[in-house]
Length: 546
Image (cartoon, rainbow, N blue to C red; front, side, top):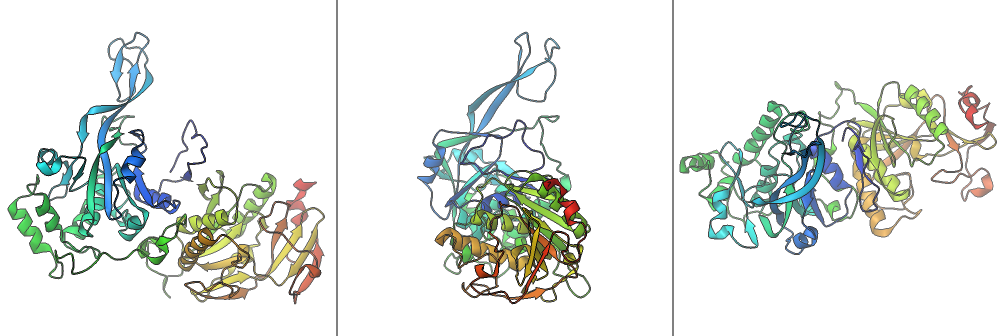
C-alpha cells in the first residue's frame, strides 16, 4: 500500500497485485489479500524475506487443519555496501565508505545465514515478545516438528477457513504490533497447535539500525501500546469468546517461561472470568461462517470488520454516503476521463473508491490484477465495498454520465435495494438515445453492509457453478436465485436522468429495438444526443469522438 514498487513488479500469472493509494495498515492489508485467495492454505509473510527451495510443499506435507505453522527463521543477509576501492560494509543505512569516504553501491548477496536459527518464541506477563532459547534445549524442543508458545509474526501459515474462523488479524489491534501473540494465542486457546517445521526455513531481514535501514512505516509508541493493551485485555482477562482454554493453561504448558513467575500465573488465574474453563470438551471452537467454505476471492470476516467503524446511523446521526467505481480499463481513455470528471462534479465531495484492473488516478484506487469477466467484476465490486467506509453506497460505472440529482436520493429503508429508473442509453456511433423501464446495476443505491453480504454469496456461487444469466447482474430484481439473504428492491426516479453510453466495449450488450425484448417494455422513448431531457451539453462533453 502507498507508493508503487520501483522498479515495478514484473507480471506473473501466479501473482495478484493489490494496491491502495493510501496505506491501510498491515492487518487490514493482510485481510484484503486473504479475501483474494481461493487456496486451502494461507501464509502471511513480510516482504523482506527469502525462502528455502520447495518450502511450500514441505510445509503443506506436515500441516493439520487446526495448526498454525512456521518454518525455522534464519536471518537474511540481503546486501552489502561496496565502494570503488573494494571495501565492504555489512547491510545497514546508506552512506559513504567508513574506511575511505567514497560513495558506495548496494551489492545484493541474498544469503540466508545458518546462524541463528530461531525455532521457539514466547511472551512474558506484560506481554512482551521474547525468543525462547531455553525451550530449544528441552527434549520437547527437539525434532522435525516442535511446538512454540508464541510467534515472531513475520511469517505464519494456516488454513484459510481457520484464518477467518479465528479472525486471525483483528483490526481492532491496530495496524501493527502483537501480531505473533495474537495469532499464536488464538490458535492455542481455540484448541489448535502452533508448530515449527524444522524441515524447511525462511530468512527474515531485520531493519533495526535506523535511517533508511529502519522500520519503514510511521509507528507511534501509543500504537504499539494499544496493540499490547488489546492483547492483554482480550486474552489475559478471558474475554476472547472462541477460547476453550484459559491463558494460564498455555503458560503452564510451557513452564518455565521467561518473565512468568508462579505469582504471575496465580494473578492470571484470578483475572479470568468464572465461566472460563480449561476443559476442551466443555465447548468447541466457533464454526467458521457458512460462506467461508467457498473458494471466493473475498472470504468472510467477523461482523465488526464488514461494518463501518462507527455506530450504525440513527435519527440523530445521518448516514454517510459514498461511491464505488469499477472499471475493466478497456473503455476509451478519453471517454473514461469525461465520465470521471462528470462523476466528480455530480457526487459533490462524496467519497469515491475506484477498483480497476490497472492503476488509475481516480478516488481511492484499488487494483486487482485479474482477467476481465463477470466474476472479476463481482470481485471488483466486493473489493470496493470493503475498501469504502460509508453507510450507504452508490454503484458507479466507467461509461455513465451521472446527473447530480441521482446522488440526492437517500434510501428510506436499510433493507431494500434501490435502483434508478430515470436512465437513458446513448449509442456513441450515431447519437441515438433510448429510455425504457430498466433497473441497471450502475444505478444501484443500497446500504453497504447488506451489499457486502450479498456479493460474498454471489462470488461463492459463481466460483462453484460458473456464471449464468439465470444469476443475472442486478441483485434482488428477480426471484430466479434463492439467496441465503433475500431483500426487496424498489425503484427511485431522479429529477434528471443519467446516461449509459454504448461504445463497443461494454461488458453487457444493449438492445435498441423493441423486437429484441422477450418481454416488451411498457415505457419506450427515443431521442438523440441533443434532446435527452435534463441535459444540454452531452454533445460538447463527447466532442472528442469527432
